[in-house]
Image (tube, rainbow, N blue to C red; front, side):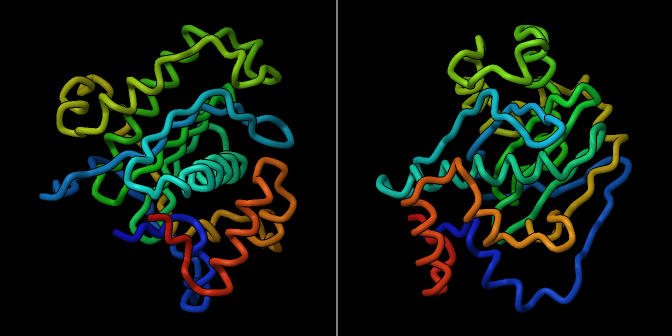
Length: 234
């Protein structure tokens, strides 16, 4: 199965006539898909004045090719940082790209969470997951560590188990029904990652300037773009 995650942006830009933004209010009544839904990543970040810092993350990349997982993980982290940096405090966004969704929430204290899933994973459940993760993280990791501590030094190890537990949204949601505040909050849905970039920003420039992307990943990006393979990861 081919997976189109990040570089598909370039092939779709020519068909994008305008930014479309949908605001969901009230209760989210999304039909449950028959196929297995999927979570690929959960990240906790700190939104600083200039950039977002990754504090902890967990990934499930078994569906991707073994030799491509490194680049997939780098681009997931890269995407999470881009979205977090462009999301205002106290707001939620869900960014759509092909069959993938990137859900982000930035709290008032600038602690942020990003979940990457497929389209079938319910938005409300994804944002409930972010709520629970951020509350737990904030309770266990002192706030003074967030702005400058490296990921390896953050004393928090719960994300892998959390990612596994929330793979089944029905079971996970049944355990978190008390978190009804998400159902009363607006979530802004963007049709492409390009829609969250600031005016004048270009994805190519962000990739080229990124210090977190390896040369291998940048080369892969350029090659996939030229061949229109659109980030075929597996």
